[in-house]
Length: 189
Image (cartoon, rainbow, N blue to C red):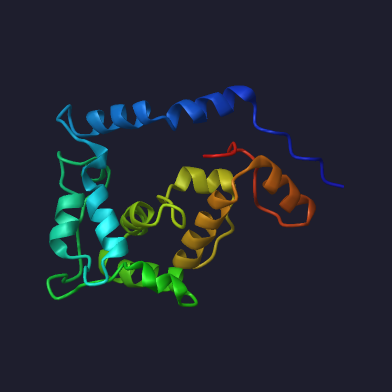
C-alpha cells in the first residue's frame, strides 16, 4: 500500500506565493531587461487581439516585438534563432478554434513547425490562452514527474498537470491509481 502524499510544507508554499506576486514578476522583468523600463502589461493588447480578432494572425513582426532582446523579459530568456521561413506565414490563434476537437494539439503542432522550440511555443500560448497553456519549464516538469511521450503530447500533459495543481486533487488522483503526480503546488498557482 502506498503511503499518502504529504501536503507541501508551509515554507515551500510561502516561497511559491512570494514568487508568484506581481511585485516579484515586475522585479524579474527589470532584471531581465538590464534595468530598462519594461511594463509586462505592454503586450497584453497583442495577446488579446490575437485571441479575439478573427482577422488577426501571428506575424513575424509580432514575434520580433515579443522576443526583442533587451526590451522584453521574453527576449532575455528566449531567442528567436533558426526560424523556418516565416515571411509568408500567418498563423491564427483566434479563440474560435477552441470549439474544434483537438484544437490544442493542432495549434501547438502548427507553431512548433515554425518556431521549432517548445519553450517559445509555450510562451506564446501561455500569454494568449493562460487558462489552457503554461510556459514550458523542465524543472517544474521534473517535479510533476510527467511521463515521457512525444514532445507535443508531453507539453500538453504538462499543461494539464499544472491546471490540476491543487494538493487535494493530486492526492485524489494518486488514490485512484494515477501515477506520476506530486501535490507540491498550492491551490491558485
